Amino acid sequence: MAAKSSLKVAERFIGFLTPLILLGLWEGAARLGMIDARFFPPPSSIIHQFGVLVANGELADNLLASLRRLFLGMLLGGVPALFLGLAMGISRPLRAAIDPLISATYPVPKSAILPLVLLIFGLGELSKVVMVALGAFYPILINTVMGVANIDKIYLDVGHNFRASRWQVFRTIALPGALPSIMAGIKLAMGMGLILIAISEMVAAPNGIGYMIWNAWQVLTVDTMYVGLLVIALLGFIFSTILDEVERWLIPWKGKS
Amino acid sequence: MAVVNMISPQQKTLPAKAPVQISLKGVRKYFGSSGFVAVDGIDLEIPQGQFFVIVGPSGCGKTTLLRMLAGLESVSEGEMKINRLNPNHPENSMVFQGDSLFPWMTVYDNASYGLRMRGVPEKEVSEQVQHWLERIGLWRFRDRYPNQLSGGMRQRVSIVRAFANDPEVLLMDEPFSALDEQNKMVLHEELLRIWEATKKTVVFITHSVDEAVTLGDRIMIMTANPGREKAIIDVPFERPRNVLELRHNPAYGDLVFHIWEQLRDEVQRARMSAEGGK
Image (cartoon, rainbow over all chains, first blue to last red; front, side, top):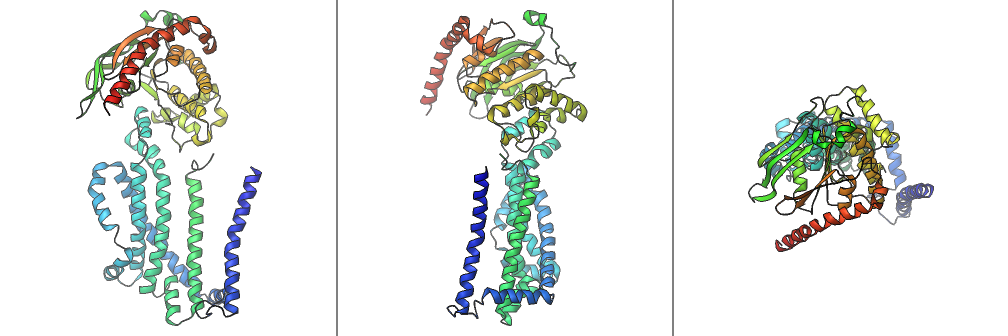
């Protein structure tokens, strides 16, 4: 047990070490003029710019704007997806009715719908929220349907044998049985949401991390561009850490042994 | 616990006096469009309190028969009845083959499933479940999840889940088939111990002749394809039984041999028809 956990610590350490080494190489190469510092500014100047943007409040404003859209979009897309998915997982007729619709619209790249969404929902906040919602809707819906539909038949047999009502079957079997798959869907949706918020803010927003990156390109402050990328990467990392934690709390039976 | 022990030992030794709990008249089961006949005309009466074992080759329809009793499969033809001798008890509870515990529930929640579905007050649920889990030595594991238990422990919990529900009839579908020999032996002993204390009517499916003779009061041998009754054999051994001593008894070996003789042809026939069908 002790050997195993110390091995884990070592693995974590190595995991931290690789990016640090790469950053060091980058810094050195930029300073020595081996790479073009106009395109690849050294990490130290990116960190400096990060400090500037934090100090003047620009970063916080943009970050909050993006987070707000992301959060509202996840709710707007995720909640209906969850309920529709559960209903489709339980009811075969409903699944038969809606499945073709989903299969036909799912492969359309959400970014390609952006102009249409702007046309319908205008240039205000709603269009960005709707973009995130569209991105969140499909993975959550599809994973929820799969999660419910793929529950091992033996569990339903147990439910019927112990005379569980339809509602009891749903509450004690369908929902918990589908939970791991639903969580996987939410994680995918979060990744999708980040992509779409960046894209839609680049095209049509007065603020947000996506706007910040696009604006930096237009005025050629490359450092700010990298700060934007760094922030998005950090957001992705933080969200997935939070979701992992939520998963551990919601699905305590998974992975314990 | 007043509900337990509904049958006195005297009744048990005179099975003729025990009321009929399960009766089957010309029960058939065929499946949909293929017309495959899984069970073909079974006539049977099982008295209350009897440990009834059905033994037969794979694919002889014994599981289908049990699933019909459990209400998980419809009866195509004939009449199948479980007589409710005490309307306060649920009719039947099944111990399934393989892993059927809900992975998302703790041992405690799994064991209390039947009682909770029936809306039994939580206080009574906890009394019953604690009683049963203690009895089978798993009370201290009550907060574990199934994937933290060994196969033998998991199967104990599914037996507790059925017993704790306190049904009139226990249906068991090869509950020990996935376990190794040592675990099997221990669980046979434990099952006999708790069954002898409750004397519930049991229908137990197995393909193991040893298991059938060790546990059963009466054994039905089934033929394969279609599933019919080949013979019914009374098991003469005294209760309570000691699994180890029983195996020492020469009569045990004779009975196992006798059943095997009848079964051998069936296994061969089942195998030939399976190969012929390929």
